[in-house]
Image 1 (cartoon, rainbow, N blue to C red):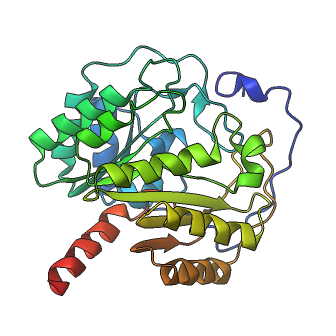
Image 2: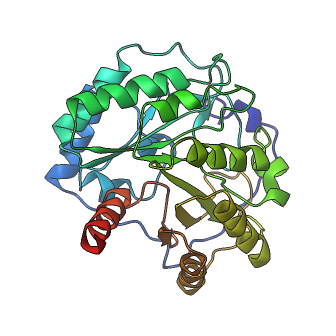
Length: 306
């Protein structure tokens, strides 16, 4: 705890509730998994799959699907739910754009998700670095669609526009939770600032799909979840993910309850009825879970409809 989350040292202990039988990761031991692991390690890359202790890592890596985390492995925020290391980050790796681009090529990815830690220490929040990664990745992989999952660039002015100018196919920023829980769950972020970021992204470039996600099980009400859906639709968000919060340790934000698969199915049905183009709602859904398959289906549907 001391090395990864020093800010949680004096937090109260919150016992972790036993997982129900529907919260089970798929254990897959395949050549593809180890190939992905080798490429990631040999290029000294960071993935959110590893840093956030994602339950889907073996399944995704066995499909050569890794979510790259740029700008280091240390976040300047201290969100109560997150397992990514917090502290003082190292300087940016200027070679990271080419490393990511080459890894995407070696993995032969048709769709890549690129996320990052928060870098409040940088004047632009890391937007220029994000842009460089997108541009270099596209140069080397012209047929790969690119999805970015960005920080909120809070108090960084219009720096986020640099990311949009690089023309990612999908601009994702997670709203994470309901407004009433923000000060406890995301103390360094602001709900309406995140909404504004998503709204402005669509205003700036209507050809870029926008996406956001929410965790459930932190103590929110059903009505609050539905209000978040409405807020995201009002911001012209195209894609929505809904997944179960899994408490990383006894020092993290306490889990309130596990939602059942039926509850996730119902929330997904409501979200689709509200008009989201793509919805993923299940206990193990994460921002990039099946993102490649979902985006491919959307593109095929567009071709069929035309």
